[in-house]
Image (cartoon, rainbow, N blue to C red; front, side, top):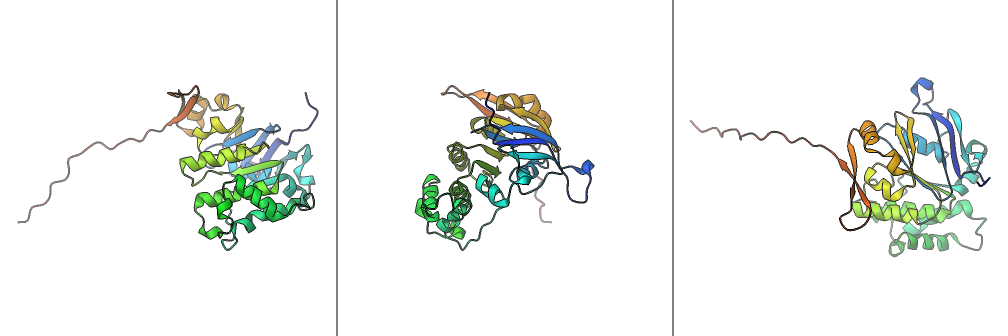
Length: 277
């Protein structure tokens, strides 16, 4: 076993709004570790505490109790500059200034590491990140001229430009079509660094995540590989729907699918048209 500390560890982390007590905790006593290179998905129904937990991991909110450790060091003891060098955060509601060109926006990610890469200009690194995100041909376009999916890719490119040791994502596939969701998760998976992502789409988890943290009412229900944590029984209990893993008709793997019941109204005869008297 390696003596190296985990890139990320949560130890009995809890959070409650200012002025509220522990009885109003949005997240309560959550603990888990993220190993080098692991991709961890945080899942749970609306109001489960996913975004609150993500913000604590990114250093944007301080736990009421417990600790978030980055490379074995409590994040509360690190400077803002050190956090920016180690952690890249992409939020679901980030709205950058639309007047910026794509390359200028992405180059902002180089600022935290400027001293470490003094011979490598921010725009050089931004160009590399844009090529990785398949956005090089849009480098001079303004952000407000991009589609929603292109803006999402620009946010990821900015995070790539930052060259972090941990990537934290809050709903990175929100508002994307199915193909774009796969491309987005494939892009971040290719970075080879630890990733923690809050995700809504349970059908993407098996292909993306090494581990899953299942939250409900702010508490950790399970943590482990997708096929263990997202069992049919647990998904039904936490989300109120059934998840099944079906054998792919051609390739040798399973396809997760959700059985979402949508009752149809009983068919009725149309009301007769009133006749003029």
